[in-house]
Amino acid sequence: MPARLFFLLLVCLPVYGVSAQRQSTSELLSLYLKERALELAARDVRQRGERVATMPLADLPPEDDRVRRWLAALYPPAQPPADDPPTFEVHALEPISRVRRPAHVKRFRETAWAFAGSQSRSPIDTLMTRDIRARMQAQFGSPTRLVIDMDSVETLPPAEIIQFEYWFIVNDSIPAMIVDVNGPWDRGIVVAAPSALRQDIRALKDALLTDVAHSAQRDPWADYYYNAFQGTWYITGYDGAMFFDRRIGRPDTDLGPPSILPFLENQ
Image 1: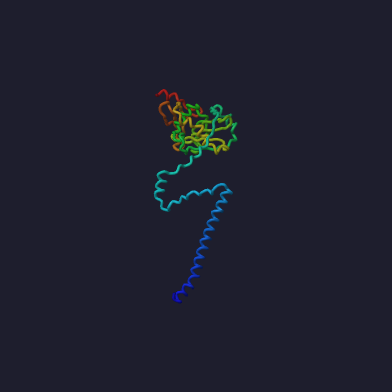
Image 2: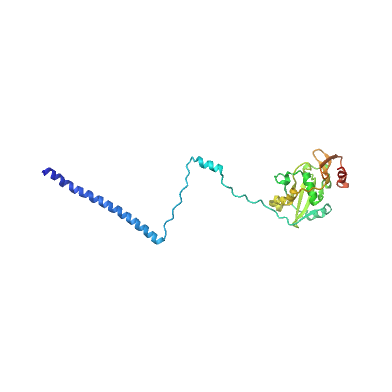
């Protein structure tokens, strides 16, 4: 072997041996770390007696998921049911007649009133007021107070003129009124109750008038109606078949309300 070649081998062999030794040490270290991790995992399993629970898959829709939006529009998620509307339980209902009105006024003279108007879309507020009157006539008889029971009607502002009122005692102690404030040509009715029941007054209105709104029974009636905007008096009512209005001069209110009999005879 030439001396030059022998020298090269002599120089390279130690380098090759060092390189092989480093590679072997790295492999041993990697194997050690792997075995140690397995041993630690096995120890945790032995200590806990179970494996770590897996995490659920994350639902990450893409930013431009048109299919998902289309499905959401086609099948919208169900809405939670709306809360039930408040209710008022009427256990007893006592109508007040015209002759009992003075004693009723004296008993509840200090009552502060709250009102529920006729602006809602409840069934009773979609009916003509003269139709409501016919239904209430069938269920409760004649009103407690009429327009002829008011003093100086023709001098009052239109907003203060009441055409008729039904008064009640609800559940033996609560005063309530059903009031017509706009005359027979309008719709709906107003309910009044003590201001302490302000939060429940619409529920009270429903309780008082639901049966009236769904009743098909109507009784004949006749009454005076004063149209403040025209300054004109009418006899208005229901003859058992049709509603009617007849323009008249100023009536003698001391004689009480008009009789329905002449209108029944004309049928």
